[in-house]
Picture 1: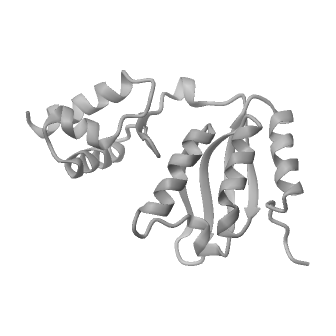
Picture 2: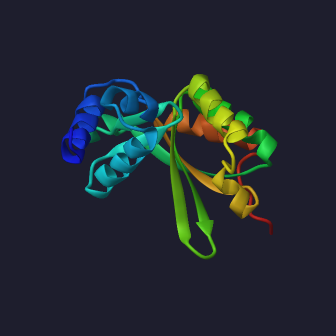
Length: 176
């Protein structure tokens, strides 16, 4: 199978799956290395395909189903050991952690897709943070200050998430 056909097959697999598909399973299915899949996905993204990475694998982002009835941004600041508490709070109140963003002094805004909707997703993400070499949260670069784009069913759910994070002193408060 040539590279063009392989990328087409990757897209078909992702479009046909309701759950994330790991690079390893795609590699096995297509009889190539995991690194070839990672490169193919990078090329597909560069060509405009909406493929997101999650702790469990790749998903195809269907624009008609990816939107949440309400999305909001929350500015947070916390120590690394509060990461689990922050993410659990968001998903426990019915939020979906779409991404994380920081303002880097050299590169400007940097963001990373998280796509966390459950404690299971959070646990897989935290496992990667613990076990992967050089896998550190973006907020390490900004002394814990970061933004999360949160998707949820309504503004009231978003407000409950924000209030709970504020009670836990995880919301960013600018020093006066």
